[in-house]
Length: 154
Image (cartoon, rainbow, N blue to C red; front, top):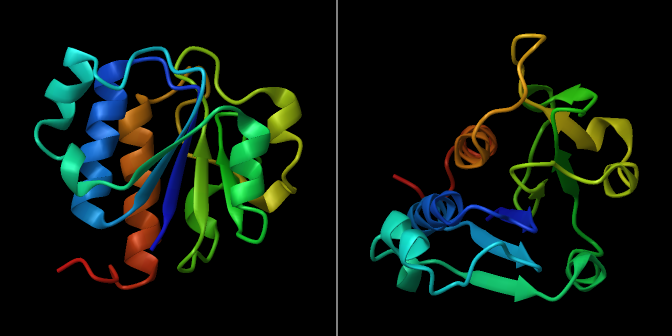
């Protein structure tokens, strides 16, 4: 089982898509406020379709509260400023993946809390800005699942 952490997500359909991904893979989703939408937002519900009831979603008031929850777990910060390619790590059950908000990414001070090999990135062309958040989450999640032989997924 893995965990996905969204730090201050802003776009409802992205979070809805990620809820759907988590529901279908058994991954827990953690949202850190402030959120750029209400959890009842029509666009988010529409993107997540009827998967909300199948996903485990926890909401935190701030980063320190979420960080305390993950105190003993390995957390990988995913960023275009990451120093280590995402596919070069060996993931294991219990790992968590932290993603920043769509318009600005993870704050530098938060990213700096992680050692180099835990600051991961997805390869892109040099002048590219970033991938869509829900796409990036899917790429990282499925690599982690592949490494543990997809766990309970069949």
